[in-house]
Amino acid sequence: MLNRGWVYREQVKPANVGQTLVAYYTQRYRHSSELEWRSRIAAGQVWVNGQVGTAETKLRLGQALSYHREPWEEPEVPLAFEVLYEDRDLLVIAKPAGLPVLPGGGFLEHTLLGQLQLQYPHETPVPIHRLGRGTSGLMLMARSPCAKSNLCQQMRDRKICKTYRALVQNPRGTPSTIPDRFTVTQAIGKVPHPVLGYIYGATATGQFAQSDCQVLQRNAQTTLLEVIILTGRPHQIRIHLSFMGYPLVGDPLYATGGVAQFVEGAMAVPGDCGYWLHAYRLGFTHPQTGAWMEWICPPSAPLAD
Image 1 (cartoon, rainbow, N blue to C red):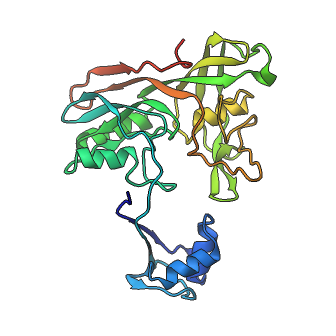
Image 2: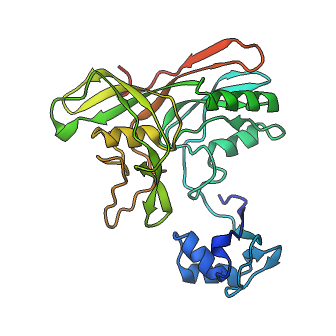
């Protein structure tokens, strides 16, 4: 079944002034070739300031660009999620692994937000934080403007407690030498990606990030960790643990070192699944009552200790 299509909107920035329309889209969105972008522009799918553009249209500062993508068939994903708590201000759910939270990467309606819009068409809950597509577990959403403001401030003040379960590979497959407790503070920032332009990884010039880790169970080839994150950088746990030399079991992108590993013919992206990561515990202060609230979402094997 096809979705309803989508309009991607953006604005011309100083660095892009003088570029042709086809050059702008070809260089910015490398998932498609110049020929493909020329075909879309010729078909009237790309507009400039509300008018159909041409491939050789020269861009000016502040112009509004819109790509009208035709309906497409989205990949199949698990769409069902469990509601654990609901009131007038907030919603707590358990997200399945494989379900994207927000549109992107070929997903529009097959996302958590898309499903929330179907179930709550008038006042759609707003995610306060995100989980990677391949990550399962607890998510918090606001249902009122007051709750959104309050919970976002709690996020900025690092007062929302988020605890994860992560299954990692032991170094070189040997009996684990991972410390019982350790903290990772490696900065996380943008790194080049040959298809997407950039993704996130361990960088010297990125933003501060902190992950506090504790061993729960040791096995011959793997170790089960509890991870508490004080910051919420993109793919933070995957990057931090791979940086330490303990990449998540099954992670197709982040291997040892905290940067993406590219194999010719198998170009992984952050939304690829297969890794073992679960949002296990979530705690926060209710924005209206001021009461501390906490949930635990038991993981499935092998993330259960």
